[in-house]
Length: 67
Image 1 (tube, rainbow, N blue to C red):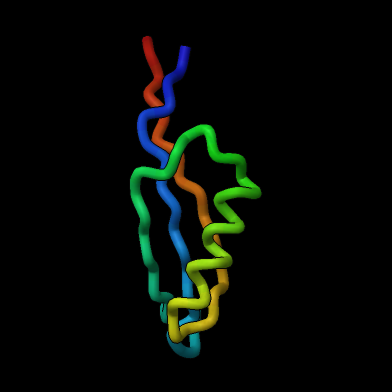
Image 2: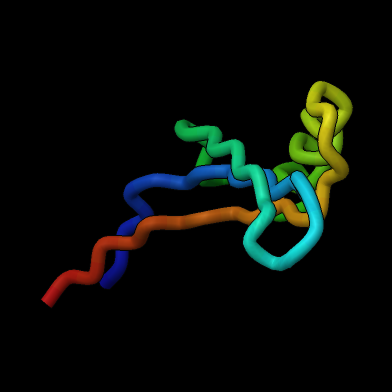
């Protein structure tokens, strides 16, 4: 049995040239019942508040595995 413990939203922005020039913004306390489409829509809306171009919206789910 598994239990979702935490869901987070991560936005990745291109800050400069090269693969290592990313700016990351993390948002905790995302409702675990939110669909992937909902999370993507929120990421796209938050993109407008940042100066850098958005290159990725990532949903991170921490899941507890029971033995």
